Image (tube, rainbow, N blue to C red; front, top):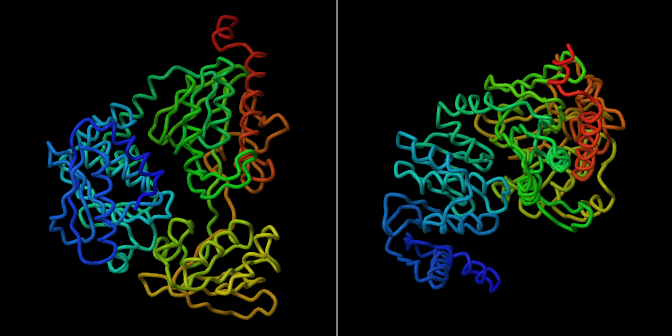
Length: 529
């Protein structure tokens, strides 16, 4: 199952086991059960601290549990093979079960152990989903550190009948005690916030104790990360308040235009950004959603950013880097059938539509790339574009047109996504040349029509916004408010690209540095009055 390179890496990792672990498999007579047996035998052969048995009697076959030999009350179960993006999750489960400490803050483990109540989680993932590992690993942590929590992690391709029966049309899909709990990416902190009713209040209390920063960055994507490194290197006290560190990069799969790196993937790049920021004394406050900016009353005073938990942070300068999110179609049926056939991530959800008919809305690079990826998985793809021609790079268009199971419709205005009450069954559009109303029968719609800046919270702050909601900045990344700067996809800077956002974040940081050294501190202003 594992090639020589992976085998060598895994053997090195298993050298970190502190306690013996057990792998207990429940298998059938099918090929995937045979593959599961082969994988577990290979793992157990790599360490004398790992034993594998194949006498499990669980109804889900193939599946296997990972547990510490000395404590059978804490376990996690994988249904199917956790390979692809989930191989790292498998390795971490083995290590954590064997006593190797996870790289999380001690208070996170304390919070997990303190959870009261019985929680039985089931979570569906696909091997190509780059959003799934975070949820798989978060649930694994909960199950291995609290005996009242169980986690069964199911590879949807192996259990396609169950996927259909339970109406799973987007991953990651998490069920709690048999009921839908959450759909989409979640970190362990987000998961705990949903389970622990006091988490928000504790977070607010911690924020309230913080002293004012010299630079506060709102947003933790490429622009925010770059800005924080630059200001920290200048010696200024720096804080990052982010709804989720990494931002939209976490939802990006293949990245092939990041100069000097021929290919990388969003989650990997986000992890590298986090590691780089971690090299400096930067206060990263994750899961913090800003709701209001209160500008300083005078030049050189403190700006204040209010969070949705009621707490607020103060700073001499603020860098806004809140990024953008996928734009919705805004047609009937889109919200009703979200995660029931309407999807936004072809890499994550594409495998759930194997052999089915789907549409991709959008003829830019993202839409055409999505259609190309899906064409290799699904039965048929219809690409629908509002404009009279596709806008993607020519190399992508040529690739798309070469694929036999793809239709392209241009000059088409999507007017409705239809369904039977439980799932999508079609798409309606108007031919913009003839005015005729037409329908495409299908089972999935992937929306890829651009971005919307995350700036709604700034509308009453005095910040100048464009008609599209973007923060207006000059060539120094400065806004119309003294001491407030902005960078990345939330601004009027053209071409929303990762590498441009990083450059803009660096520029904003240098402009903040220039502002700070030219203006008096708040304490000095108070003494002068």
